[in-house]
Amino acid sequence: MTLGQALFLLMAGLPAQSTPRLLVGRWDLTIRGPESSFPGWLEVRAEGNGLAGRLQWGGGHATAITDISVTGDRFSFVWPAEGNPKAPSSRAEGRVVRGTDRTLSATLAGAGGVRYQIGGVPAPALGSTPADTAAWGAPVDLLAGGLAGWVARGERNGWTLSGGILANTMPSS
Image (cartoon, rainbow, N blue to C red; front, side):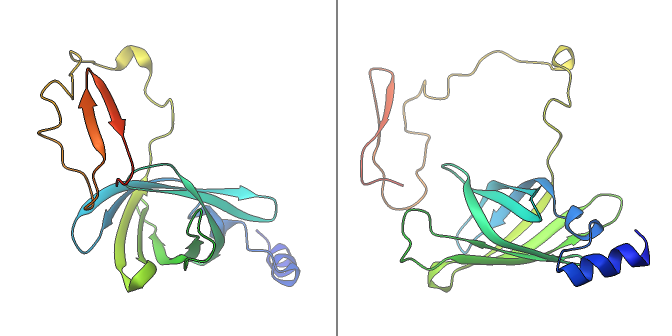
């Protein structure tokens, strides 16, 4: 990027192209909370003149993140409380570390002041392993022993297994 291009982007209020690229992509996350660690993922993509993304938090489905900002190697975003516009949003602030392998580290301040530490690495490209090189083992029936070996996250558990059918009734985690 030339100095003229950088000045144009600065005057236009747009981020320099090389800056957001640090965060753009899919990230495999390890999320550490006050009681446990769990996996998640983050996706950030260029969209229009800005950035858009989704966050998958340990379980359930991915939800949109907003107000994504990148300055140098630092970033922040807002994670709105989906389905409850009156609930406070969570806010993440972090950094992408450049090097041989990029890594991401962040702190997410959730509702009620709970803080989570997030570490991430770039996710492998989808379809990056040819199907003929995969080595698959025998199928494993994860519910053969019933639900005895399973522990629900949180205090509410509505999961049942009856006649080979796994069901979840409210209230549940």
